[in-house]
Length: 208
Image (cartoon, rainbow, N blue to C red; front, top):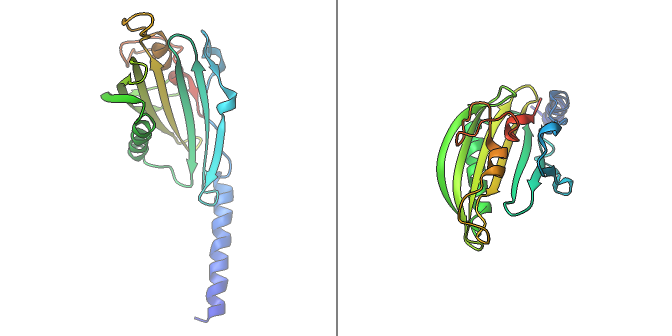
């Protein structure tokens, strides 16, 4: 095979790959979000923290939104949507999520992995979650953290949620206040910590 013929074949393959990517929907990313009606009781989206990105020549795209509440027991939930040419295995996503949590809080929060499990959300997706109990070593206050992931075949995306809630405030009391934690994790079955409700933030994420 001549060099010129090889070059022609590679150009043809590259063109086919580009067309495949273009029509696969990988260039279009639908970002998951928390449904507006449940963003209440002092919670709001911090639009300044909205973020998007692309890598690997456009074969991977991501976007994220952050919801938070300030006050004596601050809390936040970050929802990240990832789209790749082929859906990533959920087990691999969970592994990366665990690594992200541990690296993010390495120098600020002493983490103890509490429990991991599965549940089904209102959007009918079966998810995998990890719960942590933490201690903010600078503030000497207790924190609860959840990492939760699932794949949405309809939109061709992977969704990663990381929620953080302070449950003690040393200036007030050593008694835990789990109100904001409950808002993040509750569902109709009380899967996590027995918190039952239909207005949980993660439970009301729209991804397709």
